[in-house]
Image: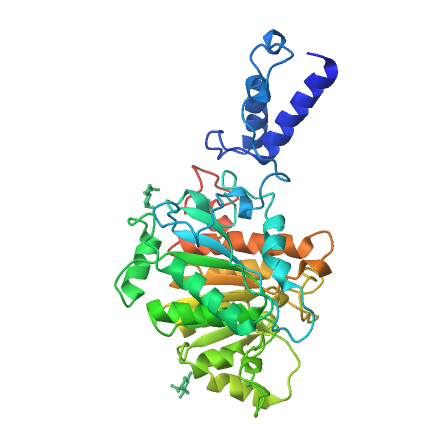
Length: 422
Ligand SMILES: *[C@@H]1O[C@H](CO)[C@@H](O)[C@H](O)[C@H]1NC(C)=O
Ligand SMILES: *[C@@H]1O[C@H](CO)[C@@H](O)[C@H](O)[C@H]1NC(C)=O
């Protein structure tokens, strides 16, 4: 083989090994990465010199794996399917990732219609074959659940009433599907919560501006009745629409949708905001919020009461009833997540948010979203990468029955013995 071809082959294999490990055995050891590189190189054509120069790619190199930065844009390179048009039998899933590229109800910067594509781009260095983390102590893709990227709802960009209906119908359609794995404990838990006594898939929605939560809550209401909400955001989003409103449709924005949801009876009187720090008209905004059944954990509360008390309060307030998790990327400090519609200075770090999320694992989460990612305002994909990483945490939350123990509890520094356990 000529030197350049040999170099190209080696480069391909090394890059492929860095990014794609579909055929590698389980790696739980510290040197897994080196092992897989070695194996990939060893899988080079057995006798490259013997292959005729007219050999096809398949003859010479075998498969066509996606590298971290190549291939179709599915979340974390998982299976991508057009679930809305495919049948349940064709695409079974326990957890669906679904894009809602809607951004025509914003008060400030538009652009979150590019959020689903941005978050998928931010997920490119993730893949289902290397998803074990020290923080969780397990791999969310290896817990028996089938996770599918169901693509995007083709939301109409000209008519919000139509768009909201499309999002509700799409969500309800996927929610009505049978789960792929009926023996999966966390899917099974939804059976006890659902009005029809059936297990339902969980959907992780990639927004989209925050208004997408209204059609989602309408769809969830059909299956579970009213739900509690855990709402990570710098803003309340329970603001009352103006009276009189210029039109019915104009009442529904990314700042009023929770108020409208409450009017429609979609919320239990036990929801929580986490990370609030927006400027308000006055304390009346908080009173209005409380009358909508919400309690507030402010951004500064984290400093005053500490992380475990934040987690304890949220868990205690929503209890064991069905809970919907909605995370506005603007809960994170704009220094760490600038690409969003209504940035507010002085937010939580990505690490703090991720840690609170882990503390909420095991609640009866019937669905989750991450919204308000507007990639046009990003730098070096920093917001998209943070958002994609939080989706990985959502998957961890959906797979586990309780928060993971701390890393130090699982594997004490002074007593390293055996393997990490859940
Ligand atoms: C279904 O889930 C159970 C429990 O997690 C697991 O043991 C089993 O392997 C899963 N089945 C499939 C087909 O993935
Ligand atoms: C909602 O819950 C609060 C306590 O968290 C209570 O004071 C209020 O009366 C409840 N409202 C309704 C309508 O049930």
